[in-house]
Length: 277
Image (cartoon, rainbow, N blue to C red; front, side, top):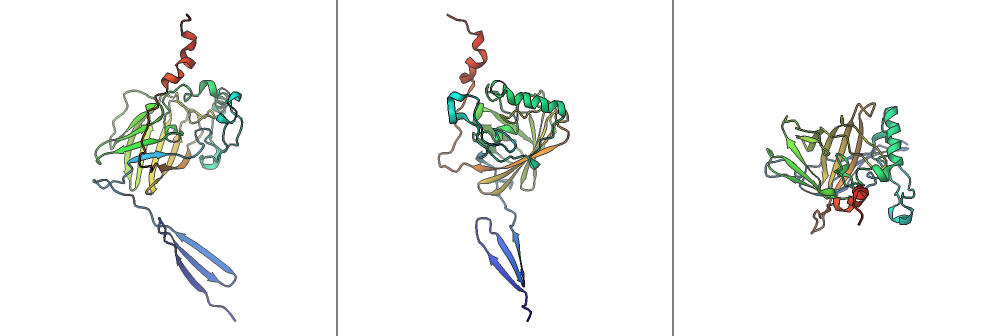
């Protein structure tokens, strides 16, 4: 005797309101998940509200790609500054370097403790500023106004110029950011870099031809999906992507603290020029 096909609908009510449709038939079970698109809270002018303090929770600042744990460069620090292992954030886990650029990347990795711009408290650049182990704040005004991003590391800031074709007067560490809304997503095109920043402590780098396209999409009240497309024809053979979640800092007293690290590295950078007594 054949068993009739039975359809069982299970509604699982959670923060995302996910519904599961389960179809049961003799010898097989099929499960289909459907999650409605999240609609973010709105600013008074109707735009998705991204205001808040955000932070990445991963090891991308150590290395964008998959990497095992390993000892640190300063043995006297023991485990205090060893490198934690982590899953990569690069799509396909491959960064498509040109052969000569890959040689430079390997040289950077070998001299990281001496040459990484982070070591010297230089501005971190984009996208690295968003996944360093420090929080950053998005300050969003009316639809017609620009968006400010303030970073704890080195007191870095950047302005996202909304709906304009204005160009940068000069190349800079943080680049020139032009933003627009694509539905729920804030899209930011960043150009005009000075070519001096790195992507991570593993020596991944770029030139002054870097073009970054960022997409900030709210997927829950306290989480943004951050996707970045990286283009640099001087260094890479094709565009490539990274993506990760950014989490809202929800502590009642969450704020950016002052971290002006320049004074901590003056001896490192200029020590040889100091006059001896």
